[in-house]
Length: 116
Image (cartoon, rainbow, N blue to C red; front, top):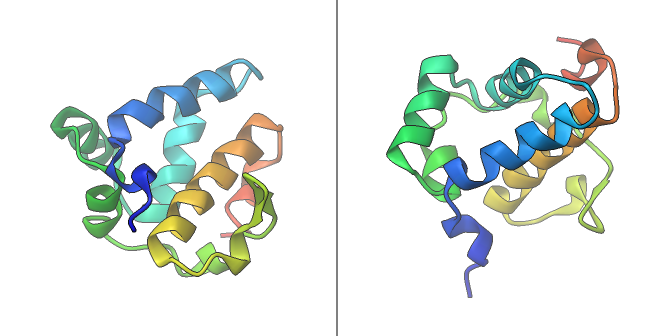
């Protein structure tokens, strides 16, 4: 059975990411930077995904290019080690969660973007 998170719209979770980092005195630009780094979207592409209300499945399916360094993202999110998640879509969603989490925790951008 498919996980219900796959059907959530990117537009519904994006503001939650922004709120999370802004509570920690970080910015929406930093959220955009890490999401663009991960997915290859540019700002216009992110805006289009939000305006079109695409679900997370479509958001990642249409991503211009997943960053080859995404596999360097490790750690625990929602009680699971991201590097051990078997479903590729769930893993990509959790990579995005993890990057936003690292922004909120105040990590340096060079570290978050895995040195690229």
